[in-house]
Image (cartoon, rainbow over all chains, first blue to last red; front, side):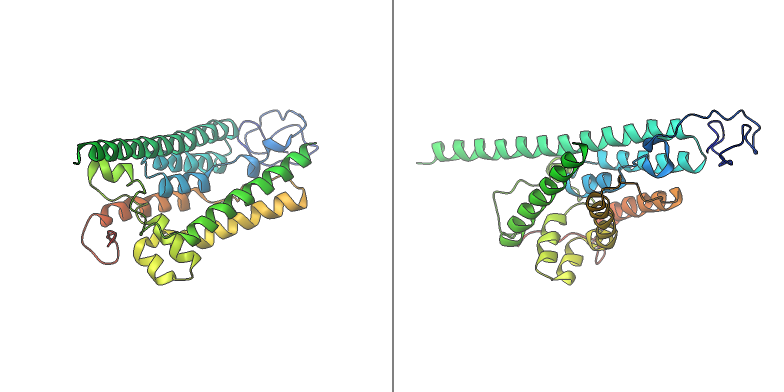
Amino acid sequence: MFCTKCGTENQDNSWKCMKCGGVLQHVPVSGTEKEGNIPNYLVQSILCTLCCCVPFGIVAIIFAAQVNSKLASGDIEAAKGYSRKARMWCWISFALGLLSGIIYLAIQLFSAAQGNRAAP
Amino acid sequence: MVKSVKYIKFIAFFALAGLAAALLFLFDPAQIRALPLCPFRALTGLDCPGCGALRASHQILHGNLAAAFRLNPLVILFLPFLGYYLFRYCFAALSGKPYTEAVVRPVFIWMLLAVIILFWALRNTPLYPFFCPVNP
């Protein structure tokens, strides 16, 4: 099991962390608690950066990197927080990309319609 | 119940991706005038790291990797990684195991970010092969 304070892996039957000496709490580890199960949304944020043309995808990549930094230092709670932020910025980037695309298309259609009316 | 929801998601994902790929295969975005210009470019007049990504994807689907590289080198660079993540996703969905994120050392993500930002800067210079060709 992992120490909740420093993230060091200890033997399952030990009650004290061998690194920081903190008391280990024997809570059943759910699927999301494990290191690999905290998504960093790296792929999504790269796709948002490349496809949505909004620099907010970059923000999502920064948070994705923070997730892995925090996981590496064993701070699971902080990693979860950054994971949520990465997901949020992916959605913001995606929504803004979609919205600006729709607005742009609307402007083009509008100006095309105006052009048709103005033409003799 | 949860498992069937996962399968539906999996099938929906592939149906959408397949539809998008089919459309992208049939229509070359470089030829469609009505397609909206990237909003970042429309506002600032600058190229962003994603400029040419859609046109590059069209070229990749037709097997023209060199043409795709010319349009957007980053897409070609990310292709193996995307393939790897897609494989992981498929494996997790088909084997019934929960999807686990690939453990990547943070330094690689920071390097990736540096590459993207450097590429962004270089795109806006006339340096070959970074600048994005405009539509003919």
